[in-house]
Amino acid sequence: MTRTALITGATSGIGEATAYKFAENGINLILCGRRLQRLNTIQKALEKLTNVHILNFDVSYKEATFDAIASLPENFKDIDILINNAGNAHGLDPINKGSIDDWDAMIDINVKGLLYVSKAIIPQMTERQSGHIINIGSSAGKEVYAKGNVYCASKHAVLAITEGMRIDLNPFGIKVGAVSPGLVETEFSQVRFKGDKIADSVYKGFKALEAKDIAEIIYFAVSRPPHVNIADILVFPTAQANSSTIKKEL
Image: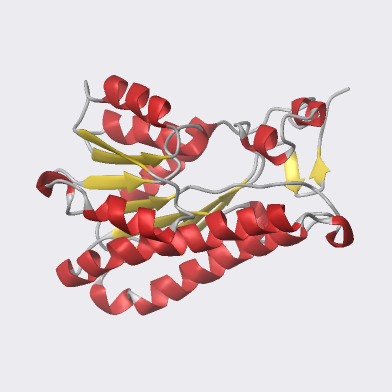
């Protein structure tokens, strides 16, 4: 039976790579994102491989999220796999100098956005007593590093929500897991540092993870047999030991 997956943050990075990986394996796709032109481009590319529907909305807006998911056509309404990938990081400041706007953006997308999308989709999974939810966390959800404060807090929340989901949805046979990457070379740093030149140096001197590496792990998780649930995966590039220990070449 062909499954349908909804992926948030599908216009770049891990979300886009996961869309391609799923399409290659015949999974129908609902791709969500804020950049309509990017959604259109990806849809055009992947429609050669599978059925694709796009939803253009921002997960941090509650009503827009519920309206978008409610608008799905009949042949896309039954969602088997939810990939809560949309997320962001803003700033790298000590708590005493942090921007409240940055804090709000991270909490609104990383935590509340994940909850809004999940709330819109979980009822159909509980009704069918089947489904698979994967929340994309971060190594920052496992440890706190200097100047990471609110970003780390938001990713700790993702892991706590994941564990709570797994407990609460266990009676319905729904799989719930988290994938928590370390350093992945995507648009992440450009967003975090708002185009500042420091963003260009984040991945220099070592081989970071690529989005496709995480996409392969996500596909592995969703392709396990029914009795197997990958609950939690922490993945680093070989050069990274933790958030502050990275082997860089001169």
